[in-house]
Length: 283
Image: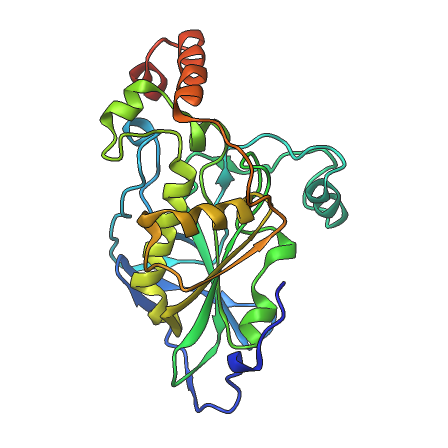
């Protein structure tokens, strides 16, 4: 985790109890006490509609509203993914924590996975607090926003509103095909994972104030593929104004990536082997 500047310190500010449930754009949500009474955690908040069926391989859509109170007390399933490579840092850490067997995959996976988590102080300062949005690594093939080594508990204690996100991975996040390109407003396909990340940042801009956060002081940060994502988000005009600072940990800034034409060719081959058309793959 990055070293925090003293400027982030909020201990001297007057404190008020954080209202729970909190009201966000989609409805009311209730969280749970974190590992200590100082922290409030909101798990599994939908930031987009489930990208299934006709929404598979489409840009994320805003989440549906709900009545009553959404109980944000359980992490969502992780996005569909391959098992962690045996011997990788994820594999070793998860096996050590007793969460997964060595070389295993998360037990709860789903295409319905576009959720985020928020850690914040149980008592909020009268001034809005800085926000940090964590983008997980994993080669764009595995990982999630809720592994134990990336929780936001300690940052929340220090006056940061911490957000972690899931985003589509592998085939579901990067499948490109001429049919998908033709139906896209951006005349492209294969970047659904990055569009998910942008949708999560849009959610933060609209809703983070309800958790005591300042939507004008957002830092995105990530490791490995998450750091790649930070690079892409800094480059795309689609993310303009959604964050003010960025931290990249362990990625190559200058490295060639495949062109749209190249990934579309791969997509055509995949479709021909699995139904022949995008419509068939969405069925």
